[in-house]
Image (cartoon, rainbow, N blue to C red):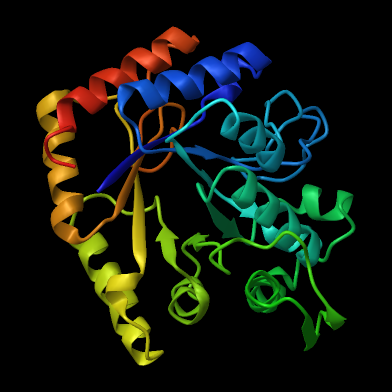
Length: 299
């Protein structure tokens, strides 16, 4: 089971030296991957009319994931990277495929693309994309990206995309980039079963509800005539409450349940997750070291 961490830049800010030091320290601590969230636009809190409690505000700092991870790829050697998650439906598909391919090539194959459909209409409006068909478009986007990564020239005619004998360069050396899905919508699991390489849920605590939904993913994957063992599962965990013994029990549960990746978030504060009390970079790194020391022999 691989261990990673979500960047805490909404707390710490994103100055270049801080970003570099965070990634290099994470690598030195023995973490396997770093995960970056995605938000393009943040609303003015004085004018938010939505009752959505997660509304992203302009004061929240998010580096563009491709720029951030490209920078960090040159500052590290073994750390791998993931978006967690990139809202692909608010972007042009061929451009995402090209950006992901460039990052994969420049990092030496240390990248997987986590995608989601998003929840924030503000961003879709500002990016001139349709919020209401984002799920259906994302299904076609997965197929377009996988074709562009694997084929030199692509001809594709779908409902939302037309490519006429064209391709991207560079392409990933393996002909593919691992495509992981976030989210918990009823259509998420069928999409993973057909096109995905993994799932990144954060809604399920370590109990029977998680075991049941993992079993459903395996069933759908078999139904799609794919090998369930080839589909990874990345769960999120937090260390804002409890202590080492609690974290070890949870990590052991996830490993027994078949999770391939576990991502520590020190800022997420929803559902069963609790953020840490501190907000400085030192606070976050101390928590990350303490967590890894506690679970290292379970991974």
